[in-house]
Image 1 (tube, helix red, strand yellow):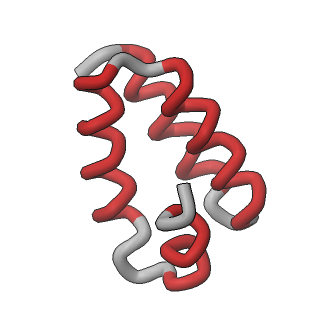
Image 2 (cartoon, rainbow, N blue to C red):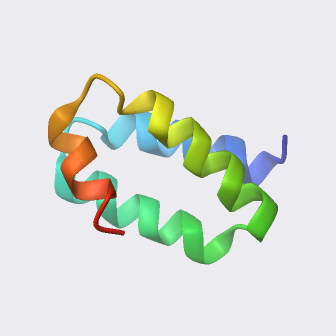
Length: 62
């Protein structure tokens, strides 16, 4: 796993209390990461938000 991917995972965990901020950081991550890293992040985010309905609604609009 790349350092960039780990970095964005940490950021997303820290901002998950705020839906708007989470979405903003997620979009930023997708703009910065490589396609392979984007896929890995997408899988991680799906697991991470599996029990957070407020985040699920926002990320599926990206």
